[in-house]
Length: 442
Image (tube, rainbow, N blue to C red):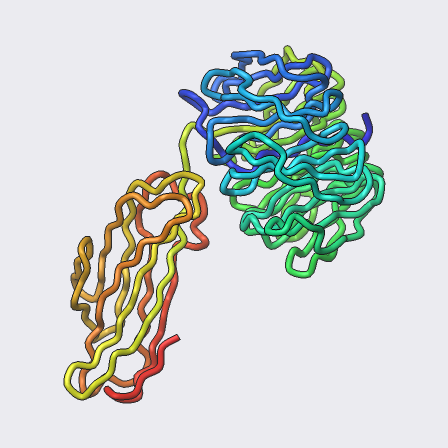
């Protein structure tokens, strides 16, 4: 069983009345469903032979489970706890990860040298990507443009371009890498080196190892908290979970758990961490504030992979702002366009974006849904589908003495469902006015 790893699901999904955790029972051919609010097992779902990895689709109410000895992936409807499809993949599939949009799932086939790409609309394999030997872990970047695959037998990580489903780079790491996870910002990825005692930190801008962190014996899985300030590593040989400060790349705590922890996952809130203890058939529940085990759940059979859904859908809005000059002696003005772009995974049902104008500036020619008071333009947006954008433009008139920079900043102030990524909630555009007949905009 050395080298098997259970990776975290990259994003939440709807799961009934409250958050649920899904645990793959390697020796039981089932997936256990945990009520995350009560830490009790509420259901047991039969799947294929020797289930290992599990991930929840960020855009649908489905969990995907890799069946190691069946060379298949079971698709579970989390609303009904029923298997709705079984997808043939490569030999000994270990782990699965979704693109942020949820349209594709990447499956690491450890019994060979490939990754299977599943089209989640049809639940069929749409591509097979050659990688290194013994692919174990797989994770997709927050941008969705890159997948990292740990090659256990090559001690490397394959960098997969998800647009072409080809390997664009190969990164040497430590001995027998297994788990991999991207930081929420996507700036780095952590790789557990199961054949040693370290975690390799990959700078995703260069695809090179930028730091090596000493953890414990046979580190297996890794997961980040939502803010990216902390990473958690399940050390199978040390029987604990290491807590890493990602700013300093140092271990700040060791949390004793059960025997041979294989998987680790963080709740979407970041308040709770769960570790699957393969050798004693339990799951440890860790309070992230105190780094102490607050509960131990029994009733599993070789628990490995774990994925946590959320009771609430999310929809990220990427705010953009552009500007264009319209110059003349009679009616000179600058046009600013606020764009609300939905990056999913769910449809935006409503949003408010405010644009702040510089001193002395005003806004005219407001579109429907926009108002202005005291140098602030407030625009409301209705439904925006995943991947769609809605533009709203307004004018900033120029006076005879309007000289210098005219900077406008747009910021998302409210939206529904919850926006999980505040990093892209604002944007600015600055025009430099030389005269009412000469101005430059980006």
